[in-house]
Image 1: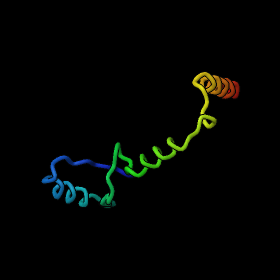
Image 2: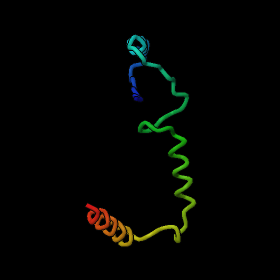
Image 3: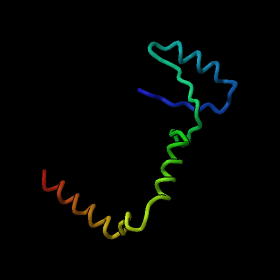
Length: 80
């Protein structure tokens, strides 16, 4: 299991680190990268690059999307 903890008061870090290390099987892994909502910033950068590379022919309309979703819901419900 992975757990991410954000500590606002850096003065508490040594205490929290020592406390966690005293637990059996716990490893402290220092994140060498900045995160946003628990994900590395480079993930968001790649998503933005992908979004910028999309062309109109790559997209579908809202109506086509919901029609597809409705079809999938019917297909899944018919399997019950």
